[in-house]
Length: 428
Image (cartoon, helix red, strand yellow):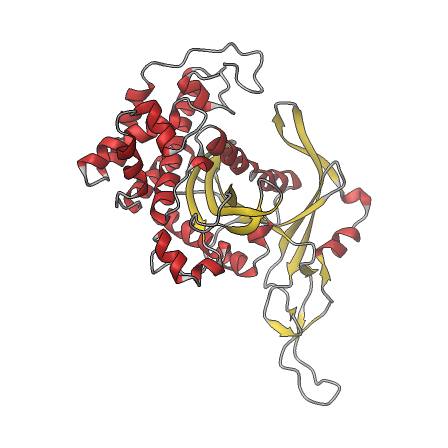
């Protein structure tokens, strides 16, 4: 098949040895499985995910790779009690080898699996990014390691809404572990960041959209971990001028001394601060070349202090101890999005723009996970089955990126980006 966006490149036949290569590449994962039956069915399931077929549910997948053993394949994913921790550690090592290092991004996001019923674990009427509105779906917190626009997703965790956490009957029916309590998405993301760092994954910065960046606790936690970051923020977020100072508390109107120091300037919303900037401060930049040419937008960057210090009264917060970059992006349709970055004061506007737009790689990964590997085709309802399927899909994707990067080394003129699974199975 022709590679999407590479119409001038001749198609090439899939290599016959990819299944044998998978067996060799996946050996460390198989070693982490304790039972011989698990070591037998894991590569079979991965082969089904990577092969042809419109549906990648367990039974449909089994029809392609093990038609006589469909229930064995289903049991391996849905009910077999193999733990995921060791395999996740191997996946982290593989991702580090492929795209890790100081030049890579660790991208925090979420993706939704649309569902019709209410029995699948964690399903609820909640925001679905795929549809751009609230819908009945499962929401997965996602972490992706990416370098040079090559993404390798390293974590998918089911977000369990509060209603589920407070419903013992539903939890028991779906096998939700007793220790799983309600956690906001940003807290789940932090736990995964810590896990990945502990597994040896190295990256240059953390990127996230406003769903995570709006939480001051998330930003503070990244700061405490001494991580560089660029995250989306709400237009209502308050900011102070970069040069704001704190004066000692003075007596109030009633003669009583105030408890908190007083900023020398008032805070304003991000939206107000951006509107106050003259048109000459905006610059049109291109951060990369896409299949249809240069990707461009207008950007501006200002040094500010965030109003996320200690709360003084009525929701008012003191300024942050140090200045940050407030970056605004104005798209062709006039929409303005805002971000905050803790890059050094010497960072150029182009570097800030490229950092922010690096988050695109996770969207590409989510699309391929669903379109090529059937991430959203899983039909089981249990906690164990879902997380087994998520992990196996991530392993299959990492193998595709391994082959893609190996192909680039041996054939530098061949672009492999959008449809690696089709290259393997030869499907059109």
